[in-house]
Amino acid sequence: MTAIAEIVQKLFISNGLLTAFLLVGTISFLSGWISGRLSKGMIHGSALAILTGLALAYAGGIFTSGSKGLADIPVFAGVGFLGGSMMRDFTIVSTAYGADIRELKKSGLAGVLSLVFGVVLSFVVGAAAAVSFGFTSPEDVTTIGAGAVTFIVGPVTGSAIGAGSDVIAISIAAGVVKSITVMGLTPFAAKIIRIDTPKTAMIYGGLMGTTSGTAAGMAATNPALVPYAAMTATFYTGFGCLICPSILYWTVLKLF
Image (cartoon, rainbow, N blue to C red; front, side, top):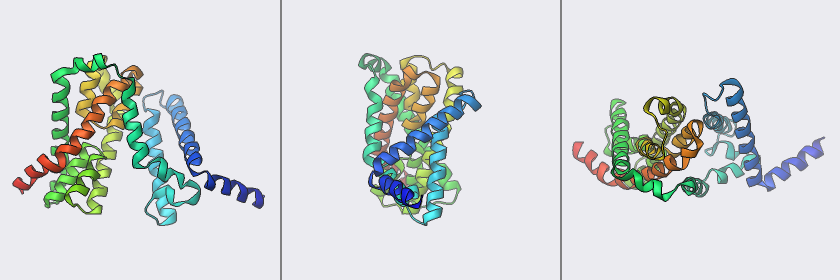
């Protein structure tokens, strides 16, 4: 039995990326099953999968005392590549491929304004929270505010303006909390504010921003609207990466 276990372990380690796909696929399948059976779809499977991933990352960090979470365990080293920036950017871009360009044009001025308003509002809320917790450095306040925009904009902004790694970690945490919140509340909000057309989905994606949260929430509401919400949410991330370390950082500098 020991020899078989060693062979299986070596097989998993030598095929790290396949092992990562197997792990993520298993988590996604079980999360979807739990979502359908226990919550009747009220809590989307993607939300459960993200929470499970965060728990495993935390457990991996505690077990290995490392800095890469589950990826510090040799058997799961492929998770580090699968969750890296290259695969992340690929998946973000791929969400837009199902969109119809004719529907995108219909969003017009409303879609553009939703992007601007969504980024600025999220930044202001995040920056205000940072100040309320005692942060006074313009770099710290800007980075945490950018994290409230998305967990991608936060570290991009922090790296650009020279924020500390601890503050960048806080900005990522703020973005993850936002993503999970949007993911869970979208199915309920969609019925109240009537997100039932490509145009309303694009405006909603522009206001909320977080691609993962918006896409998963819309998938639980109406899968056909996912590409439209994800499209503006992707633009939201790019727009945030442009103005947070520049215009909004300059504004914070003037205020502080």
